[in-house]
Length: 237
Image (cartoon, rainbow, N blue to C red):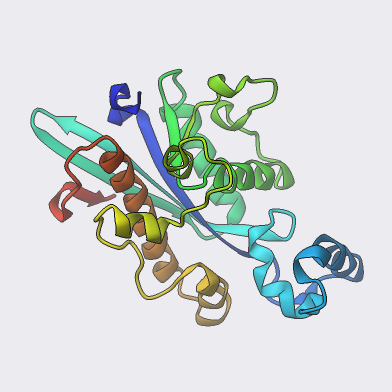
């Protein structure tokens, strides 16, 4: 029962990713060929490999992380706060800082990670990029040999599915139907690569990522039938 989980033991998270190279043409010949093979079923005959490259950020082999935002609850008497912070910029530093957070502050058995579709996307993507960048994988992300009930992750999409594995509900749709203020600002996921490479506006991406992290926490509260966060309870640190 998710009502029995202590909120302060959950680290809510979201990541933003972009293609590892700005343009398909800057990939070496072998990577171009591997990209063509990797995406042939998704592209079919509708797109060339180059035309499809703007979607490279969804694959850890061809993308990279430009922001990880995290949030966690704190309680002091009757005062509830949700603290949000972000790691952004150079990918190795992002991953090292996130590793440090998990290893030193969210490393106990009771600690859980929570995101929307995080089990399928965010968490595997982070772990794969850590391997590629030769950064140690913290215990919370090292799932080898663990049984499903031993994996220390929550997923708001999975919770909403109620066992229906064919069902997918976006973060935006779920916040709408649950009466949660929309987390989306002036960009969406498909525009992050353009904002990063062309506009070079990482602050805009960080804001977008943090709004999604807050939205995940709001969904979790709604699933527990608890009061939503108000602006004064959210602290950006």
